[in-house]
Image 1 (cartoon, rainbow, N blue to C red):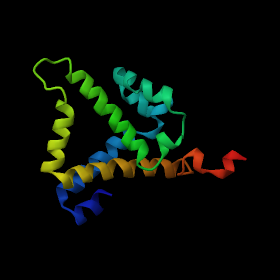
Image 2: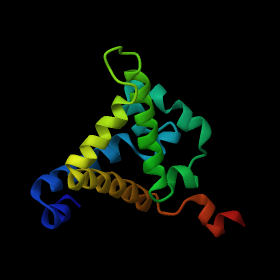
Image 3: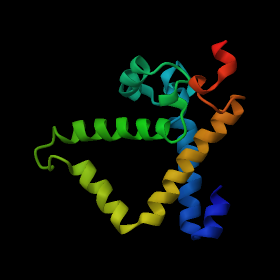
Image 4: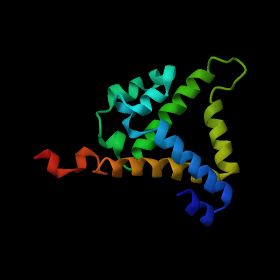
Length: 143
């Protein structure tokens, strides 16, 4: 995936995609809603996934769905970062969101490369699970 993005965009974007693919596979797996290796990798910070684990059933549309699962996990991380930044008096209210917006405006190709790497890692995970569709989409399981 990184090589493809490097050829399509530039070598830096290829490296970003590769790093995001590794990060997505190791730390932002759709299996964060279970007791998984990805959850254990967060160490003492694994508590940040408690809401995710309580609200979403395993292999649901919201955790394993195309684009939605990755978006949900990223939004949860942004929410936690925003909450933590609120405790520092020298930061603005929406410092994390403003920072992300500035990065998007300054380097849209690199942000896109990062997001492609994250989503590609999720798709590899789903394919390796043997059934890339969320359980709500699979009619065989409903019978």
